[in-house]
Length: 248
Image 1 (tube, rainbow, N blue to C red):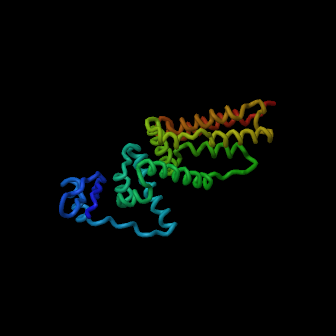
Image 2 (cartoon, one colour):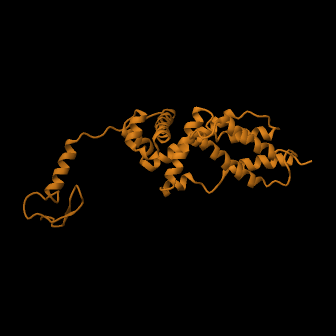
Image 3 (cartoon, rainbow, N blue to C red):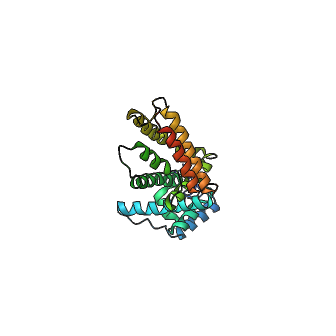
């Protein structure tokens, strides 16, 4: 006895009324039948070859670096999945395999940039542990485009900031509620006050907010070539002299 229950289309899942005679239908329409035929004729996409963890990290970094170059040179709005793949010299499927979608790509590239920036900054900052003034100056100089690495990173961060103004999902990642850089600067000033190198009446947090925002603005002026390096360094030295002058 024939089962008279409704079937389901193998393509779209729509209900199919049972046939009176012959083989039961498997497609709800000629359109779905054609789609199934094209799918059978289309060769399957190859699965990505297994990679060692170090090789995977290297490919992710290669793709992220392409995002940085596009963001710094043309703006983050130009960093489509296809543009990034072309810039990185890899396939679109490789970008999708390592990062998934567009949002994951932008967030992943930003996280890798932060990580590399921190490592490079630690390598650049050479100071006497007892000299908080030298340490603070070195930290503030990380906001200035004093070499190609910092210039690219600062331009990239500026592109992310501009995009975050109209992209709430990206803003949620880019604009943290915490202020680690201001906390670091405030901690340096507070330690200097404890050592007697700064006036005790200074508000370390307010000074940190002013120094960080000022250094960021000066760095942006340097990117636009509105100020040169000597002028900006002189401005930072002026404020450091003010903070590290103990009233007699």
